[in-house]
Length: 161
Image 1 (cartoon, rainbow, N blue to C red):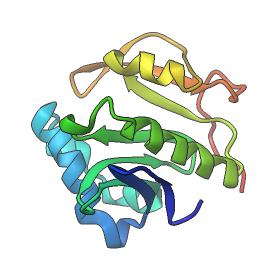
Image 2: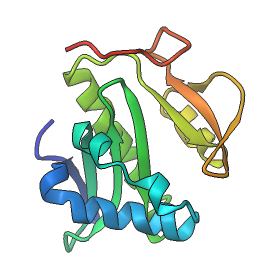
Image 3: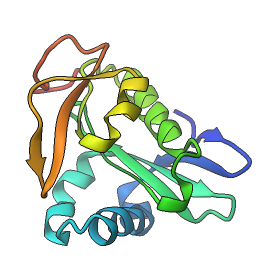
């Protein structure tokens, strides 16, 4: 994936480096998960996990962070967050498209995520399907979803190199 994966007049999405872009990635996740959704900060941050992930970052025309998502080595997509004023403007779709492209480049076939119940329609439109029963995570109802390219019902234990 190129440095600027997708550009529109209003925003662009690029690969992010946790060490260099940490403050911008954290700013979005803090705003969405900790402040807006009241998820305890200690459940949001895991430095060891974030260092192993591939991150994407959406920036507005002034290079201010507006969205983020990550891909874990096992194929789990997570920490998908878009600031409220930027929702329903294509930011989430562009972030997810960027991660799907990265997964293809890394030959990760079995992609999965734990979607908040109210976001399932978004993921279904982008090729994910629900599996298993709803469950609570951080006090929010979620549902496991797998990408239709995935063949296994359960998340993989490893990704192909």
